[in-house]
Length: 258
Image 1: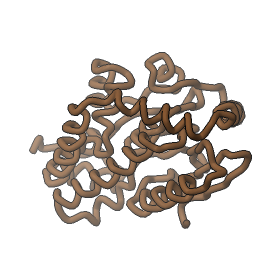
Image 2: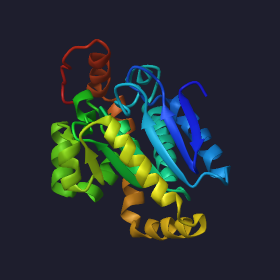
Image 3: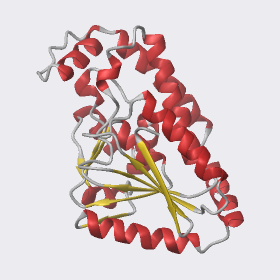
């Protein structure tokens, strides 16, 4: 795989996002992530998965440059649906998946982290959904998972302002399990937690994770379908295209509200 590295040791598989400089989640990265999940799911020696990023960031978002190659809102909605299905697979994965986050998890990066069963980060990590700055909306179920983790009011604030929160604040809101002072300590503590979990029976962990999935209701599934549809509508709009172009050109977008 070109953008991912998979390493296994002591029943723990580490999936490393390795697409510098920001580990942007292109369609190729998402497909490679799907293949990596196939690999670790089939490996009977793997009991826990740790997902982390190489370099400065966990994942700073989706690949905005790739958006310029999409020709229609329908294709944009299909891209959203692929990401939604992949992240849903992670949430329902039969083996626990731990996100080890540093630097930033923004947009698609945060959506990926929210799909994991457990989230650990550094205290200064930036976490947010900045899509509205681009004239877009979240596309990988962020609008549905975030309120379930931090509450409706805070999720609304984060989505409408595009302002990120720190790892420290994210713990207090329930978005993260733990936050540690630096990346070295965070990775050490993540490994300790993964090793503790790996001592459990694979069978009972699978049963427990399956039981937890029943906490969702049908409104969630309706919501992600509407999100993919809205993702396509936003892309087809003037402001969506303007936001993407402004990001590529490193300038402030001039929205026309249409």
